[in-house]
Image (cartoon, rainbow, N blue to C red; front, side, top):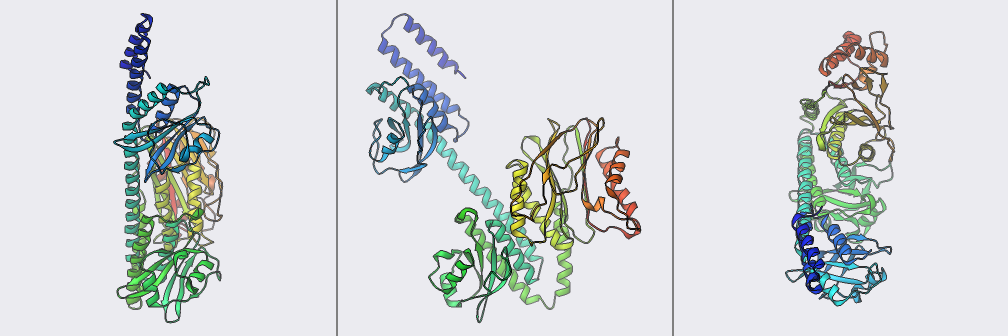
Length: 585
């Protein structure tokens, strides 16, 4: 886009050229106009991430070169590559300079790697006597060498770019701070949720299982374990992710030594050499987190390596330490009250789990132009493993989720809560198949071998009337068309949690006015009458077709009442959940 004032100046320069004015004067005026254009364009650049690319592209065009690179400061005379064009040779992502660069010059010394990539000139970008960027350009397209005047002009362009580049660096830092803050908020919310669950149980095994599972999920580790300090050393309390018999049941440990060496979370490789370090390394543990009660050492949490061997960040260690404190407090409470409150604890656990589960279900359906949505979930026992949700996404889209965790009762409910939290965190961050593939890895790593999740996830774009979906082993939703054949939504792949890696494929449908999509769990299709006959897919289809002219809520109520009538006095045999999407106009 041409900036009006720049266009006006260029028109005036063209008039001066035609009048035969002094060429040097016209050249200087042209460069000033270019500087104005450059400054304005960078000032209009939307974000700090785009500025390096915009600056490099403008400089390459103005200096008539086909290759270039731009490095931005990363502090302490370190620089990171942020933009590169037309360079065939590999350039390092990070470099460090030991000397100050004064002006545009040939690459040499610490910048010699640029010459090896056929870049002929390097120009520093300073702001307030601080080197903030390096610009390197290849040979001119016409083969001419850079003249001193052209190098001076390049330095002027670089100086002009300094302020926008510094603004981009500030914008990058703001984004980093906001990202770190978001991570902290997310972790605090997790700790709050986990704290509520810990406070709701006095079962020592359940506390250990929740802590170990949470730690595995947070670090995306393949294994984790909790060891209690006993008179004979550290004894295994609970573990996840490792086959039975592959972890040491006992590790050497002395209370005084542990209290001295484990004041906080610590990498196993950094522990002093000895039997404890060797045992943890042999079991493929990478991080240990102490469990400390007031005045004495209680045990430790051991966590496997993260994917790719990435070391944990500082905020991850803070999270682990806070989780360990919550764990220790919960374990202490469980030991003090276990015998006297056993029956009361069981009843309270169920009630808390029910409230948590009900709290995870949406309170109301979103209001969307041209669509109605209605959903209902009903546990067969006090709590269950069915789940549905509406997830707001960018651009006015909404994610529609219905899932069924294997099993019933509290274990299924807790697993459902984890799936809910992870899907809420991941939805919209990647295409739908990739979101569920990541969710599969979490479910696989953090649950027992026999547990899995069937899940249907769709992203509805009301404006385009398009539903992009992935079906991970779930009952295929029914599509009843106002004008057209009925169909089932089957595209996707296997259930989540049985395999370490799965590949899922998306499906897509367009919904016209009057079309209806009904997603249900097997508590609907497999509901049985007193004689043992299942309700079945065909009765679901007939029930939906009979209410083709009704709205989403009426259709949902009719479907649920039909299932209840079919089951009769015996009631449910499984959790029942249904989600109806109706295109109204």
